[in-house]
Length: 139
Image 1 (spheres, rainbow, N blue to C red):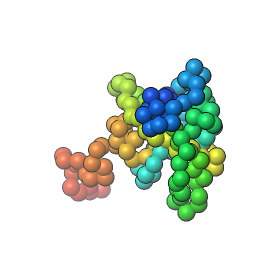
Image 2 (image 1 turned 180 degrees about the vertical axis):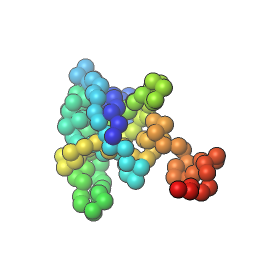
Image 3 (image 1 turned 90 degrees about the vertical axis):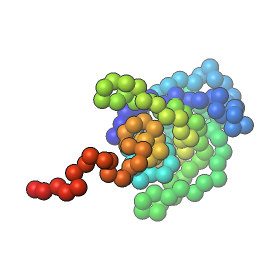
Image 4 (image 1 turned 120 degrees about the vertical axis):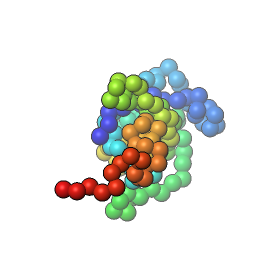
């Protein structure tokens, strides 16, 4: 689990042709997110988008069927663009901008592999073993 700051990106909504209705109510929020290197897209409960100050009109419509590990429909209802930031172990801020899919069925937010690489949580060539790692571990 990573606790991160989500910040809405109204300028990116505009670029995508879906401007946000009112930017005055937008704010950042802190949420815990599941770091899932097997996840191919970031997804979060729609409620988190509401906590950012977005309205139903701000949600980018999408046509997407996303399934979880047990093949259940995750109920994607739309998406928003958000900056995600965390602090690394040295206290430096790490950021990535992601399209976050929204679902009323999800109870937790999930970070995909691309977001984890962008935040420096995973190395760029994960799951390749970095140079300098021992080839064999003996016990």
